[in-house]
Length: 233
Image 1 (cartoon, rainbow, N blue to C red):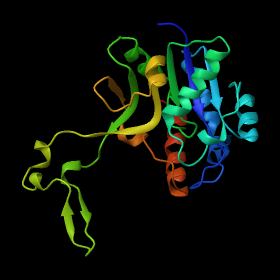
Image 2 (image 1 turned 30 degrees about the vertical axis):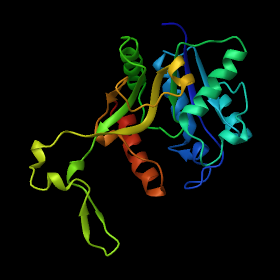
Image 3 (image 1 turned 135 degrees about the horizontal axis):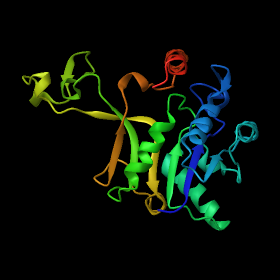
Image 4 (image 1 turned 60 degrees about the horizontal axis):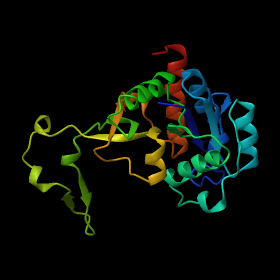
């Protein structure tokens, strides 16, 4: 397998937590944690930040990433999804003569990602069995026992056929950790989805996976990150 590329998507228009990608997190801009993890992993030929925002670009360069292009507005709104953004980044680099074979999308707001996670993902991709490898963790409660509230506030199971099943007899379920996605360049460019038979995952412990959608989420993540700093895994 040839060259490896990290693409860190970091648009400026975060709505739920404004300026999240450069918000201070334990004394550093949020995006700095992802850049430092990528650099410490030692597996990337290039670390590129895809952004539409001048401040984010400045911060990214300050912490050691490249910003060789500006992401167009149509790929920086609230509806922009990961695969087209990464595909655009790859196409920009191909146009300048750089053709990577393995590309890792590493989210800018992933301060709990560890260099060893990124290394494990690349090792799995290099087996030749997969088009994508991403970070995931197990669900803390059996998803087949979940329910929703009906319009009348009653309870309606999503999987009523499992009403009588014991939790220990149900399949273990996993969810995306929202940290990184390794993929073959051709898979990104084709727009192949992540969740399919051609993908596998690096399993992370549940305690190290935290969504960052609210200020409370950020507070929880800072507590976990502080633990990692003082008691590295």
